[in-house]
Image 1 (cartoon, rainbow, N blue to C red):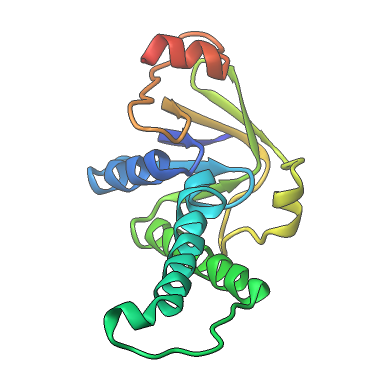
Image 2: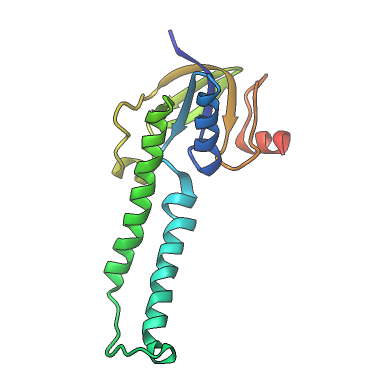
Amino acid sequence: MAESFDIIIIGSGPGGYVTAIRAAQLGFKTAIVERAYLGGICLNWGCIPTKALLRSAEIFHYMQHAKDYGLAAEKVSYDAAAVVKRSRGVSKRLNDGVGFLMKKNKVSVIWGEAAIDAPGKVTVKPAKSEAAKNSDAPKGALGPGTYEAKHIIIGSGPGNWCGPISKPWSRSACRSRCW
């Protein structure tokens, strides 16, 4: 028998994980499906690491122009590998924080790639992406299998409420239906 939830969120981006937390806080039995890294594109590859890289560039710029501020800094240089390492570390710390929030709020994490097979039925297969092969599923994460839900939310962006689903929906069809 498939494990049953009130709400399953597909994708753990900024909208997905916040939705999962709030649903769990409201008393719904909640799960979130993720194929690679908790936090989605923004946290792991987009916004957050980019901002960390830009902050390093900003500090470097200030150091090069220290004289403009009445300061002295000579032979200012940078270590590109260390800058990238810092950026990845910032993302990892926040990624771990999302995992902590899932555990704290009793949101089940289902690790893999989701497909909606029928109304209220989600099948999760092992993730095929390279990222998923290199990542570790959060401790206690559920794996591939069939899951049931009263409501399914697709995507990690704000406003992706897509439930209850009365027939299988593709991601693009869901977006046109929900937005």
